[in-house]
Image (cartoon, rainbow, N blue to C red):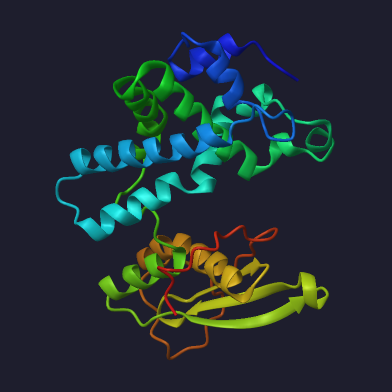
Length: 260
């Protein structure tokens, strides 16, 4: 399970002077008393500072509110988990027997926390300029491929903004089915945009998650629908765009930007 730590250091672009810092950063509290939670605390603060500085320098035309939204999206658990996966961090974790058996090396919260701990360890080992370079290298590929004005906005918000920019009426959402017991229900949500002849279905573990999933499918369908031209609405739509989202939506619980 434990890989050569030099491999991880190569991926990070930093060779530790004090290898014990890296070992501690990779140690979950289930493994030993010398675990990574204090390093995680430090790494969280360092990461926020570096990302804030990076965004301030990179996007000179974005206001404070959008900068805050961007930073929140870049330091949230899901983003950290994806970066940790790219680093293969799960191969280097030091977990207790119980966490190993329960698949702790796959758990997003553990991997995200460990990544923060590793960044805290880099900071202690080599200082701020070095950890700043490590963080920038991890995040640059992501930022080079996304629209900063869309990053962090949920699908319902993006769909609404898209339709408003084209003066098209807002989508209509409705529950078409619920499945499962009360404590583990799955909702199937229909999203309809009559003017574009779009009718899509999303699934989620809550109504809001289902709406977000359906909104994302509708958003993906908008470009093709616009090329066909708006529907007059006078004739029955014989072949509206119909898509099914397979599986359960994994929408983040952050609903601060969600359109009600």
